[in-house]
Image (cartoon, rainbow, N blue to C red; front, side):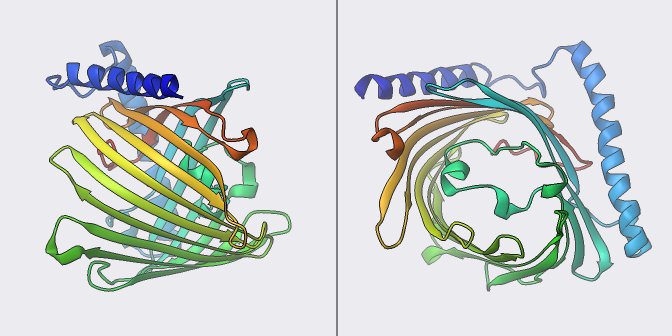
Length: 330
């Protein structure tokens, strides 16, 4: 046990050393000039196509304001894989997209996206690994209307109501309600955020999830978080819960580390610990805020292996296509 923990710390130290070596690097890319010259025009063309397509569809259903208002449409392409101790490396390519059509009616949005939030697996799959971007074909495509709340979540509960259909044979209609709230505790550094969702899919039944996130900045580059998740799905009729402690460390403007300690459990009547894990995730803005690399080694103690330590490694390279993007590493 001591040896495996020391190995995790060594990996983390290597990531930190690499990032600190590049602290004074003011460039926007790790790619050579010839790669930049080929990638940038390609990215601009695809990003323009994504935005133009969403605005044209929006103008058909809504108004001509579709060509001027902000849109949250995007396309994300990823390549990577996962290795678990005792198993072969599982590589995959994936794509996720979202077409946001904001002018159909005031505060009523038509949303077309490739993966419903409810299909992203157990809390163990969500917490202990990078997002799985493997597409599931048309079965995962979702079309719906979202009624957006206009309240400030720092002052009162913000509610969003949605309904639509998942392109599944037979068609899978759904409804969804989400609520959000953000408190600043005693005007201090601690903030508590609540994110809740209640959904119904005709094929899968009801599901409910609540997420509570308590966090505060420690200094200009480090942020501490305590995250509690509880999830129930009628399809499996099982209560899941997780508790995670995260220390996010921004190493420089293009690199960050996330150290996580997580506990995952199941069952309300007979609670049991399904897994405990340690994970270090290194994220690097490889190229101008559009291409990101994730490397995430982790050590798990799953119940199915009598809580013996098991290694896992996740790798992911992602490219985002959208006209305007958030350059934050985390």
